[in-house]
Length: 271
Image 1: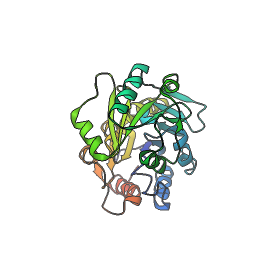
Image 2: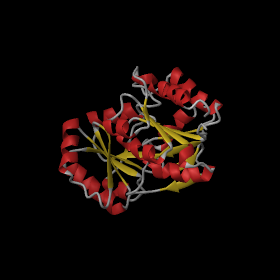
Image 3: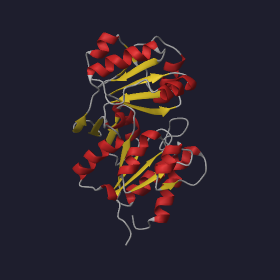
């Protein structure tokens, strides 16, 4: 008997979005195909809610958003927030100081805005191009006075890689995830897209076995482990390719999600 799926969680960067940070018509049709088969689609990303909302608005029928790597789960207009998880202030203060000492550019995700304590530079320009928003400058003191979902260090890939290898961060008190060659993210322990999806699935009355997840990065691995079925984009990170149930057929990165959805339908005709 074919497995019936009720929920699909889709990552944004490298999955739903192309290199131009837009949703291709082909990927848009793939989302609609899932919805027409009775599968509820949610967006799951490390991006801030306000940054994700514009993409959700492009996809009729998307009613839930898992943002900030699972730090917040909310409905489309944010009138129903299922959970918010913030970094302890002590860990924010430590990451700010350590990141500055290592020469990284820093951004932090607050409830309503993304902040930076760094002067304008090429790394902030990279962030703006990637995220489609400009962080608001504020002092460390201002940053410490408000709840922070996560904090990012940005720098050159070799410097990021060196920091990862040196293991300078105490992972018993804060979680570190590399989401891009130029990015390190710091979040509360045990918070991930999977932890967010677990809360949302319980609210919707859906089991992990009834959930499909689509992604391409290290931060998608927890939801791959949690869900009944997972598909990694063929251009994805090695960790994602190893963990996924399937890998999308080879082709242009901008339409990988469409090929992934086609594969799911081919393998599981009775969605």
